[in-house]
Length: 233
Length: 273
Image 1 (cartoon, helix red, strand yellow):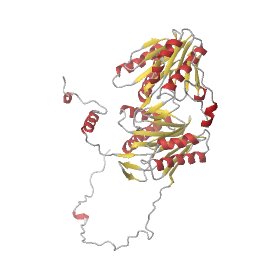
Image 2 (cartoon, rainbow over the protein chains, first blue to last red):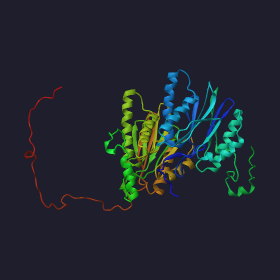
Image 3 (spheres, one colour):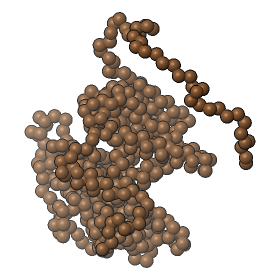
Image 4 (cartoon, each protein chain N blue to C red):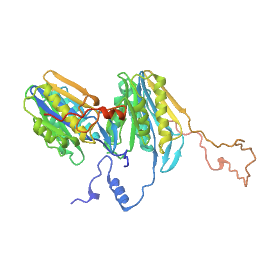
């Protein structure tokens, strides 16, 4: 196993965005990898574009950071010219234009989420290639492969904020358990009419899944640790 | 179809040579080894500011090219930057951004901010798509407080309370992960940085020689060059080295007076406005 420290920095990642009755909840893991080495175990992949629009980034760290910087700049100008906060649709479209027009050079899969007074909470998915697709919920990144079945079963329309947040955290921790390129902590951002709330879920607060062991100081303690409960919806 | 030679030259970096290099590599031609700073570089945020550290070995393939090079580069009086990767690239990019920061200081009349240096570095590196091989640990204290960032060759950045880069980064990171905590004092911070660099020096072949440390706090920067010298020369002549005049045999002497070669002209026009 050769650690390639000159490999491009990529957000291996699990990113999630869901709408609920009143706004959106965005969630992500915190692992940034350079080849097989974890370059940052506590990164923040949910980046602000405006007061009311945030973006979850996956793919090449450099590419997504540059796109976010450009879109933040354009949206700032747009807000000044418009005289009111930018809509989520405009923000997502700007991301899409950069992604599509530079598709040969970029490796960026993002989820744009936010709240505006016209359409309420919205989630727009902009995967590799530069398609834009509005969805009630969206998942992305390498860890999302493990969540398609989960969401098919667990997703429902018109959730409360608590339900949506629990769903996002549970989904992220499931993906982090199975995907090597995702891990660390779970960060969530809730955007609604009242504003923006950031939450942090440390590794020890996340549920343990099949065969995951409790952290212990001594291996002898394993003999007395209980079996984790089977998953319930 | 328009031939490549007919297209007008556009501004910016020409990636043509990169394709040629790749083609040569595929054919089996070996790249000449350029000087890399094998390197262990670290930074951490403590109570009153940031501490940066670096080893001092520069390598050219398997050979140590410089046993005591300086890897902590000046960016601004309140901002320093450690560089790993190709030595020429780290020197050039830090010098360039340092100049840009000074011009910016003249234009704005204010102390430089770390995020300014960060943005200048990341946009430069991104536009070269990773071909400028500079991996940097940027740290400083400005009006908004102490900051520590890592910058990668492709242009991505991270903001961290403690960071390591270079070939010895894993050895140094193991020290930080065990011993770092928030609110370290100045002495504790320096000691931890020195320990992390030593871990790189002794466990990584690309790092070695001495420990350089730089402490940046609000209003004051201390560059502790060769803070530790844990690798002294073991075998030194006990008699010492002395070169007495007359010890070298002179074979022949030829003296050429300069006047016969050069013509000095008096007067001339005064310089005009």
